Amino acid sequence: MGTFGVRIDVGGGQRERWEALDALVDTGASITAVPASVLRGLGVEPLMKQTFRFGQGETRLMDVGQAWVRVEGREVVTLVLFNDEGTQPLLGALALEGVFMGVDPVAQRLVPVEGLMMRAASGWRRLGLPRAR
Image (cartoon, rainbow, N blue to C red; front, side):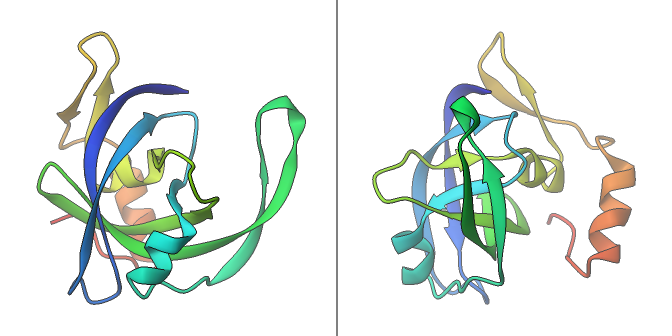
């Protein structure tokens, strides 16, 4: 679940435009969530619809796309949820794994962990997604 806030940049397709956002680190969420208007403004289009389960057991069918996420200078293309307007952006576990960052909830900061999820990195290649740079 959410632990602390960080500054992230979200970029569209060719990374020609970026939007800086304050996001809540949410290790309980797999996918990074960004307000739909921000994603559309960056030229990100939905690729599919996916059902998500929220607190109190609510489920909703929502748009999912692919965008660049930059965290502390590290970039990765990752799945993003087109979230409701006015909702706090969330930095999810897939993006954190993609940029090889772990969470230190006590110090409330992200920490680089180069060996983190090496198996996941090979999974990114299977999906045709580039690794962090």
